[in-house]
Image 1 (tube, rainbow, N blue to C red):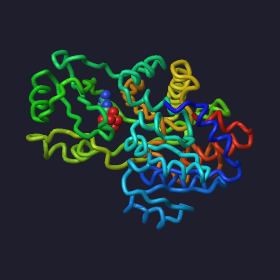
Image 2: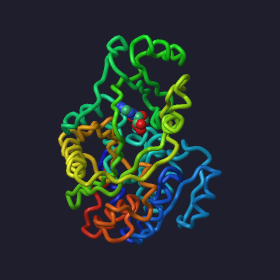
Image 3: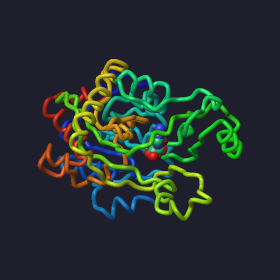
Image 4: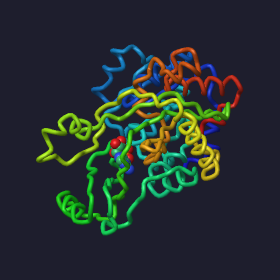
Length: 354
Ligand code: AMP
């Protein structure tokens, strides 16, 4: 783990009027870059060769750095260059996937917005469950062994964010049959989770440590293949239905019934409170709770993403909720830049960089 003091030491050396917000060219980089510009920051995008055109085409990047592989992101030469350019990095989903939480914690010697400790808590399923339980959220039941399966379950694999490879089963026999087909060696590495039936919501929250406030900025539903396609052909496929899969292919906007908003907000607040208890100073900035609303209007939460999620790309120009809060186009990317700007204004940058 890079000591916090070392990161804050780097930050102390930064000229405040030179700060550049930077991210990796992927996932939610467009809105992060646009948000940085809208808040008056210089920005920089680090791209793998071949994808730079997107960032040039949309005109949102002040500067581009090209790397040949994502691993190069952690080369001391590049990290030094980023520090020399007074960079604060903004993490996102691809960033975490390509660099791994451990490498971000131990090797990324550049100031990073938010609390690095959160990455370990969201990526380790046991820790994640402890965190969500401490937040008093309703979670799907989990089965320790396939023999215990007594209802429809979803079998999940680690690191398979985006739902790749997941399968459903209704009893131990179906589990064994489908599991054998996968030809996996390591039998331990899966989670068997009750499949909750209801409607899905993926609210995008932002916790501001400066204001000590949880904001609901927007919401989406993930569009998943082939499960979302099957429903269109339900009658035609009824004799020979394909195995459902849950690979994310896009995002659909949604708003929740207004009477559900108090519950949705409270869940976000409880998650922040629990994070402070478990890994002080806790979660900071954007996060998303993946949840299902059942017919009794109760939510079951099956996952947390403790950074900006791709569903926020629907709202580069703001959402109905962020409009009410800000009366100007406020994406999650821009909200991050606003928090950094506010921290600079209060001379408390070190309180949001860990
Ligand atoms: P995840 O990797 O946990 O985000 O799950 C990928 C997708 O699988 C989700 O977007 C949901 O559509 C579905 N899913 C995950 N967990 C559950 C669950 N416990 N019950 C029903 N659907 C789920």
